[in-house]
Amino acid sequence: MAGTLSWQNFARGAQHILRISDDIGDNWQFRGTWAEYCGGYLAKRMDVPVAASSINPNADGNDADDADDADDVDDDQDCSCVCSNQVNDLYIKELHIIYSMAHGVPMLFVKAWQRDGSFLPVDYLWKDFTSQLLRGDVGTLNQLRTLTQQEHPFLGEPWYFLHPCQTAHLMSHIGLCDTTPPEEYMASWMSTLLPLFSCDVANEYAVSGRFNGSS
Image 1 (cartoon, helix red, strand yellow):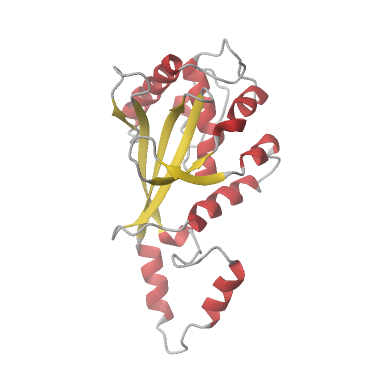
Image 2: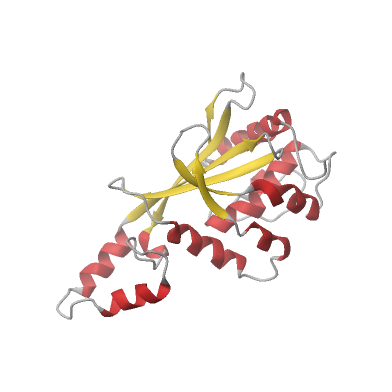
């Protein structure tokens, strides 16, 4: 089927990503084993400044409520101290690329948490996701607006993921086909989806100049 790839080709493409990542210090890792069918996944952990998101970590996703909470701040609160903490603090975001046997495509799992171990609400992820979708003509990317939560297939804990049902169509839409080298497929897939979560994809991953990533 157009836009899909086998596990063997996923593994080949993933190994290409790991080789380039090692060369440029991009921190992608493989967790699991290549010896077992669908036995592992790619992972990258990122430290992200809290100031990059204006969402309250305690928010429930209602923008109006967030605004009300801001109005409720005590007048005698030291705002300069709060702003300083927001700028200097970091939260952790981790991306996992896992092969979907059911759909024959990579799947993107994502999770974010504070340094004290408490998980951040999905609002943080949606802020990145929706801001990227609103930039320019995104076309088929709008079909990927399905960020849901399910059990991570390797870790057995809840993670958010982009549902892969539209991935094959998206990959076909951008010109990938059955004869596309898996290295090129993985680089194109990453350059299309990872920026939705503020994860830049370096130009070095491209094998034929198909995309212009961010260094």
